[in-house]
Length: 225
Ligand code: SF4
Image 1: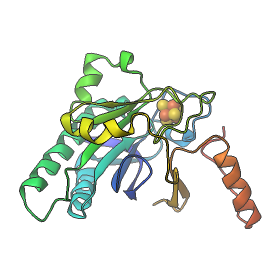
Image 2: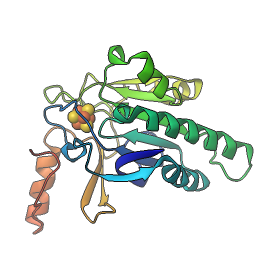
Image 3: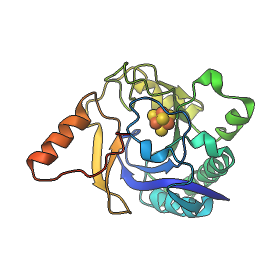
Image 4: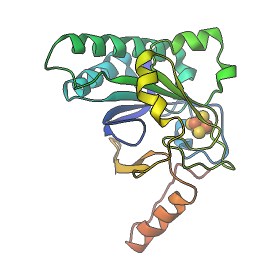
């Protein structure tokens, strides 16, 4: 099945526990004020790929001992059929890898999905698409509600464990604040500078200032209209 992505990154260490494969879906109509990823809004932008190609990345990440898969965006649920197929395939590969000693990490890899939808907005169809996930992080980004909570951009956003693995892995983080850097910076496949993670209020402005002091001027910023 085809899908449209903003990009992928491995190893991702700022959106979920441990070392993860990050997959960012393209397209979001929720238009949260202050969104740092406005470049993911246009459903026709990004690049077209297939679930099979993303699963090949996941297979390599598992062989490397990845702790999990993080799906974000954009809004993953706005490509619900592809998301369902990706999660089902990722769970199958994870469970298969666990059965072959030596190809899995020391603990099972979890599947985490970020969605801007609130739990009450999830229709039966959307819930079905999320069936393979171990945990969700739900809710719109609200710029007026900054938070120190780990992996969340605003205080309203919730970690919702869905499976026994998700409960075991994410319950300790429900109310935990960030202790590690919240942003990971690296080059994207398109040659642009990429920020992975959830900044604190003012952190993006501070980053721009530091870059300017070192002679780096940003021509475009995904957090500005
Ligand atoms: S914060 Fe997330 S849900 Fe909100 S507009 Fe940006 S990509 Fe969409």
